[in-house]
Structures are given as structure tokens and as C-alpha cells.
Image (cartoon, rainbow, N blue to C red; front, side):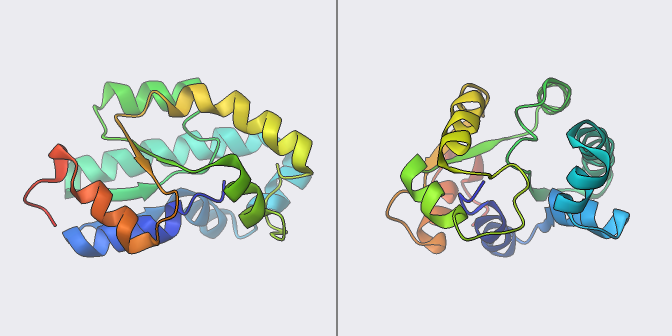
Length: 164
């Protein structure tokens, strides 16, 4: 939450001429309500079910249509069924590692983050999710870097040689 997945993902997709998709935005489009409203009306379990179903469709589309850059929600990767799906399909995953202090600063004024309540709960959520993030195929630091620099760091990874 707040690491720049959408911004960096859009820039990366543009640079390598792949289609970009933001999982949370697509959920909001399909449900015609915000993520925060889904959480408020139906709860996190219902949201996670919708998230998984849509992730399955997105990866199937990618398998048929070619490369995609997908910005996952902050908790998507921490859900065992999503992690297993991505592993099974050998998806390349990248954790945009950002210091928790920077994440707190970026998220503090955002009102559309249903799991951001206060600093203590945010830090607890971060600590719960970090072990999952460490299992990503690659880790790229976003510390002290503008989105274009983060994209350059991603494109320097061996998997992207020749694409950017």
C-alpha cells in the first residue's frame, strides 16, 4: 500500500509495450463501487473472493493474449490462494520495496485505503505482509527513486533484458 505499484506499473508497461492492468481498479469497475465500499458493505472476505476470481481471469487473459503488467493490491500477494496461483503459472512477481516510513507518509492522507486506520495498525499489517513480499521473484527498491528510476531498476533485471 503506497509503494507506487500503479504508477510504476503503468510506466513499465509503456516502456515494454505490454498492457497494464491495476487489479483494484478493475475490481472497482466490475463492481461499480470502490474497494472501501466493498469492505464496508460486504467485508474483507467477500473482497478477497472477488479479488481472487478476477486475478484468475486476468492471468488467463494474459496467457492467451501475451504480456501484461499487473499492479496487485497490497494484500493480494499475501493471500495463499493468489500466491499459489501466481507460483503455479510461473508469473514473474516484483516487490517494490519501500521503507515503512515512506509508506506511512504516502498513505496518511489517503481516504480510500480501507485497511489504513492508524500508524500502529499500518505497521502491524506491513509486518504481517512482508514475509509474503519476500517470496516475490524479484525485489526492487523504490527508496529515494522517482518512478522512472524504479522502472529503470526493473528493466535492469535479467528477466527484462531486451524488452526496454
